[in-house]
Length: 460
Image (tube, rainbow, N blue to C red):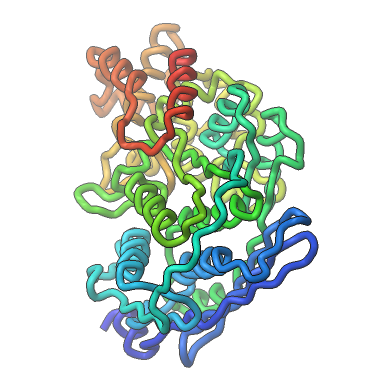
């Protein structure tokens, strides 16, 4: 039998046992208790800053928010054994909510199942058993909601969202999970004070790392769902009416060719729609959740972003590099290479080398990642990267520019030419298609759509 089958047989039950809310004058704190029966307990926690005039005492809406964040957290611990039964002992779920969470877990674990060779389907992978059925409570008071909350990750996408909305005169607050230098610098570079940044402190239970070291299952989980539910809590505490994400249309593309396996599922429009529905029907805060950049591709975003050169020295998108303090570009991963490629038509080779601290396009050890990014392998890198078509467009435009200037092509671009992939004849048409694209699969309120359209006209 496989590890998956062995663990499910040995550890048939996972429990979402409890969540505990406490508060001080400055914060609201939530501690969760999960356990894999007969193996391990987990106690992750969160701390959210709060205004002095806010209290969660007796607030049933906040109870729903805290419980829901726990459901998003739980999947990270459940995946160690993939226990066939999840007993939810501390909150209410209707049959439709159970279906909603099963879909998020299943689709958000697509990469985890694929990489671990797990063959299962949505009907059989888990049975979520709530102790209490959902009893709809009084919705929150919606009168005081005002302002925008923008989750900031330190990368180019959230920087572009923030810069565009601040320049349009929108009142913005920013949100981060745990503080990183690139996040703080992004907020400051946008012209906002440090007080504009609200940072939640998330403590991961390291017991899971110890289980992984012993051979229990590990892999990617839908982290952006955690961002969504924790941002909802932050917006609710601070009476903010909009949560404005920076996920793009390119996030909808499957990571594995011919399969519905998307590393970025919880950044997809499908999840955005599902979360919007869940908020309206079950959380009922009145807060609107949408992605400002959803109509755009990564290519468009890159072209717009580079016009704001003040962010080039401080933005960071590297997951490996985020583990350092201050965070860096590691210069050795597919995410670094993707960002380099998508920016390559708009910046010189020297500018790119300065950003990443290394000449990635002349690095032989980047070739395998390059092959994955241009669609010449079974799957794209398991990272948040753009679509195959727009990567190829960016490379072709960069090659055309270098050849026009009679410069020397870097190693990876030489390889691209050798494979006969460079097609200058279609470049103009492809470039026009991407630069004028505006996906109608979006949830932008009209006033935000007008701001984005005006900025596109100005920059593209």
